[in-house]
Image (cartoon, rainbow, N blue to C red):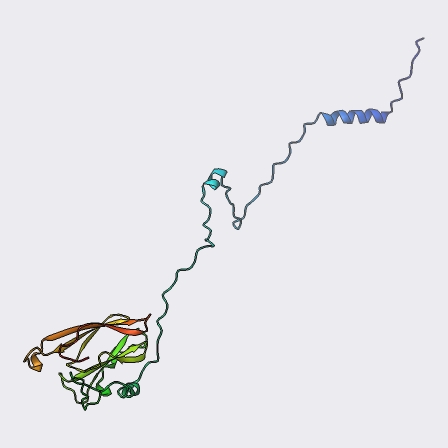
Length: 220
């Protein structure tokens, strides 16, 4: 009679578990789920990164020079006090009296009411006002009062010339004066003589410098 050897102690549960393991290992492996889509909203700003070559080719921003100085502006002119009608009236008593060609004082007064005050400039280095005598005519004596920055500094001549002088401004400190006079036996209406002078304010000397000519026959 054959001897039967008992099988190793394998329980029914172990056999069942082994069968289950075999079945599970034979099933296919599930694929991973797809990567979720990322949505960029309209408020996001995407900046492109420039290549090193593009960055190096850009010129650096200009840097203000620390040594640069602002340009200088011309100095404002000095101005005196503007004169009114009463001031020009008072000035008639400060100016020398009318004199003829020999220097003799004539019995006339300067007339501030008819003085040409439009040429007065309190800011100019040299300006002027032309005064006639009272009751003047075209050939009557006139005198030119001179001003520096609004301050009266004297008259253009020590004697008085007939005929209204023509005064032109050359620049802020220089005036050109054309005097009229009779040549020979010319009548006042036909007077053709002209003498031209210039008056310039010398800031260094602090006075007016005259150049040019006066009508002939006067003692200065």
